[in-house]
Image (cartoon, rainbow, N blue to C red; front, side):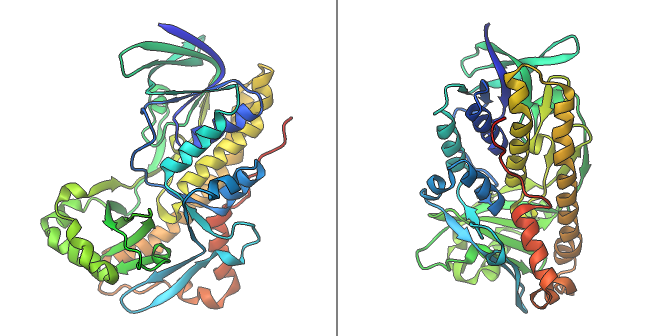
Length: 406
């Protein structure tokens, strides 16, 4: 078994892990990033970078380079029912150089961030590294033991191990950290339809509500990635109604794409995403820190998850870079990261819960009598109702910034 020494071992090559690795490497911290897959070429759920993340990238000189890649932008969000269409969020009013949501496939974003990280000599990326065990000594985590695709075993010894390995975090299980869970009222059917050159350019900026269903589209250039919301645990009923009923519903919600619903030719074309939300009461142990979805799984409402994972990474880098360089990492540093990031997470999860309770659940349950909530109907006429949701989606309750090297 080979052994590798580093200052920080990050497990999980998602948005949180890659961004943290980049920020630490920029500050001359030796960091090893372990990713269990052999590449990033797979279907991710989150493609939305909000203004807060674009400002973070701008502060380290990467926003322009990222925007040189193929992407789409959304600066307004509206909501559409069979009876009416109303503006929901307008990001153009925000005070930011990036008053829009940037849509870029997460696979491209991860490739971009890791490519930038490779410019720094202190960064190491190991793909196909499937972590199996924590390495512990005297009650403290001191690294991990992982297995490669060819069956070889390796150990990484580190001052600090960081779990950024997503909602099904293995490090969270190995550390026996149990989250507090909630059950949002929906699941998502996840599928794609071809995109045509004359499709509406702002099609992804509309939340479509029909009889018992909600639908959103993401522009992935050659196709539309579609999230079709159904009541929690109701997939068996949707399936028993038949594929034709689903095709008909999609055609009604997106009339200009009704001629393409036939591309859903089998249930194998559709993935079922179980929507969950949770939060750890403690994000750390001696020698171990969890961030991103490993610490707090977000509802898909608002496309916020990827952005909060990156916020976690920025705060962690701000606090940890100096103690990692000086070999003085203590649990108080890990506690400080949780203190700074837990309350914004609680606030945004409560914000999402309100939207789910007042909009999503009634729309999915009471389709015949459903009407848009009064706050949404009044929002275009009341400045606070117009600006507050936009600010929460764009930045959360507090802006996060990359601090200068200390």
